[in-house]
Length: 306
Image 1: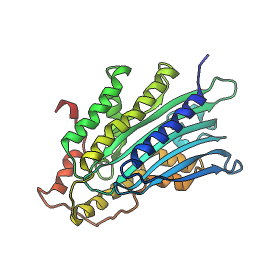
Image 2: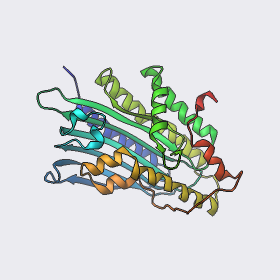
Image 3: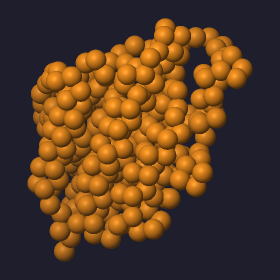
């Protein structure tokens, strides 16, 4: 008999959303705007709801922390791609997603997500799995920040096996990659999906470690760089590079696809988009500039071995 405590996951995710919002808002004590929503059960067989929280303060040009909990009659293709036998099953999904777009170009953009899926197949026990992770997207990288980020990721993985960090770092490097640009979205972190072994308790513990690890990894970097001086040239480069973020989210991101395919709430799904962005045809940074240096970081590296 498989023991799956959906209520426990639900309560944790709500608590995590509160903790992240509290940490982000503390930079200048400006509260998040809260947008609660629900789905009409008659709409594409989807029911449930959630809460989107948006922050615009002196540090974050826009930060979104979204909680959602939905149930549907048919598992979307993006969620059943690796499990074709579940195509057409009823499902329950809940998760917290975070995207932070700082104002200062020297503070990296960051993303985190933790989620839980349950597929119900008639006559069988529930089929469940966890997924999530976090990644970092700097525009003007600092090696010490990236090593700190990966050290936190490594350390939270240690209790779950000596191969966990290596495997989930590699998965992150491969997932957050733009083939049409031949570059990574950022400097990586952790990514995992379809996690249901060895048991529910162990997988849930890892999910919680990832949730805490995001705060432990990101907040010190924000505090270290948020007052770094910059000029319009750095701001323009930041807006240009944000275009890559948009390209990935709209073309490749499975979370975006799942939300849209399942009939989720569009405004909440697209909260990951930066508030301002620019594209410039044929842009090439000047040789040996700080902007050209970014390209050296957009490929997998073993940061903790350097």
